[in-house]
Image (cartoon, rainbow, N blue to C red; front, side, top):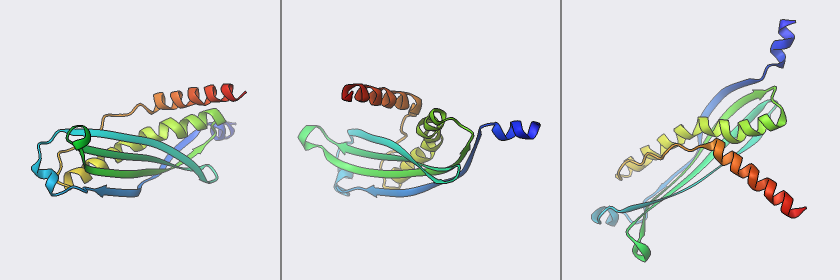
Length: 157
């Protein structure tokens, strides 16, 4: 009896964390190093997932950070960093809604610190000041996306 109960329990195991894609560009160097440093940071963030085998899912967090220096029309791109931080997760025994939430919020929460560290490392290797991105609340982003989908579904009905 105990074995049957254990088989019905939800299972979650991180199999692997890896960088899927990584890019750093400093299009205005070395001239940007001669200017006063007044950075403006723009962060673009999203995630996606796909099933790659039975009970095995790949989740990818995509981050694009663009830092411009200067004000208004005179602002020039100092650097651009793109990271696709991925992970393989074994997930079994979850209902569809729970699985969707796990893939859309919990797994990105696991991956984000690795992406943040990769970005910071690239930025400092590019001779720019460290860039530690603030933590992201993927649960709130997930809830917002679900509300937006529900509103769009009602508008289409």
